[in-house]
Length: 195
Image (cartoon, rainbow, N blue to C red):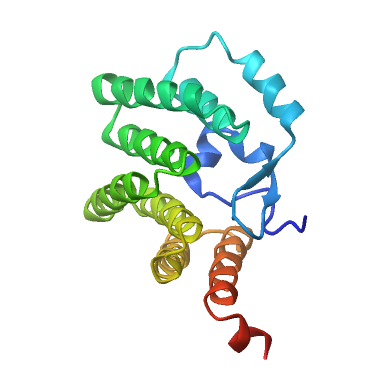
């Protein structure tokens, strides 16, 4: 399996803040899902199993998701959204909602994930929270890509590139978003791309 993307900066500031980016080894070129070392993820999950802070909960949701323990991931994602709603900031709530939507995506509930991600994008852009908006667009693009909606995927990934540039993202983060655009373009029209 060919890997695309780089280890750092791929998901934007929200992932970097909670430390998960170190577990991402690349992206599957067919699904754009994260490639991880399951043993590293299992070890980290065991390490933080008893922590109850919102960042720890979000990290556990992500770990459960990439380990394909989706029922557990969804239950914990719902709990994290409730906790963020009661005790977190609006930015915390948006991050929790985006992560919950990615669990819905992995479960194949693409319409529900898109609805949630579209709402998160609208709120983040409305508030001028550029890094969170880019994060939500990136995941909306992945969800659309997986659902076969290549026009929406392309639009979301292009918006991610624009927002990351606006936020001053490093070359690795921009490269990853540009690779996602390129992957969608190849999927949309393989003849035009390959000659």
